[in-house]
Each structure stands twice: as structure tokens, then as C-alpha cells.
Image (cartoon, helix red, strand yellow):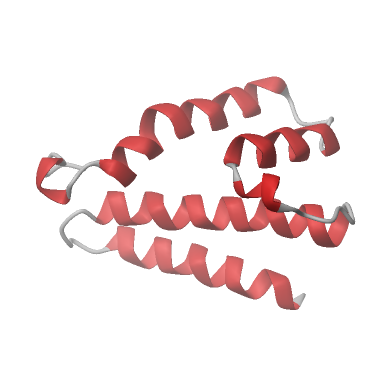
Length: 106
């Protein structure tokens, strides 16, 4: 396994483990870890596969997604729409709500 993939795989395994157990806010924690893995994977792809030098502009998710989308042109637009929906409608709420505001079923 490539060294840059180890952290991504570990993060995904951690998310899977957390979401299997009955712990408070497991879905919120899982979303945070899956999101971290996704962004890390995007950066790893751009750096190691597309050979793009990442700069400060790639710290912003919008720029990161725009860059990776330009490199992965064979991915269907509906996938990118799902990623945008997740980011705008799901992820931001889980990240920014206090844990006391999150419904128990999440």
C-alpha cells in the first residue's frame, strides 16, 4: 500500500468502527471522519497521481473540488451534485452544531 493511502484507510476504518457501536453522536463522528478521508484522498490524488503542486488556495474546499473535478472528467455530474449536497446540507450541520443540538437519532 502506498504510504499516503495508509492514513486515508485508517480514517475510513475508524469511521466504520465508530458507526457500528451504540455511542452518542456516532453518525456525527462518522461523518466527520468520512469527510476527512474524502478531503485527504482528494489532496493525495492531486499531489501523487495528477502531480499538481497544492498551494494555499487548495485549503478551501471549493477550490479543491474544482481542481479535482477538472482532473476527473469521466465522473458523472450526478456524483459531484451528491458531493455538493452532502457538503452543503449534511456536513456543515454536523460540523457546526453543538452536540447538544443534534437529535439523538443522528
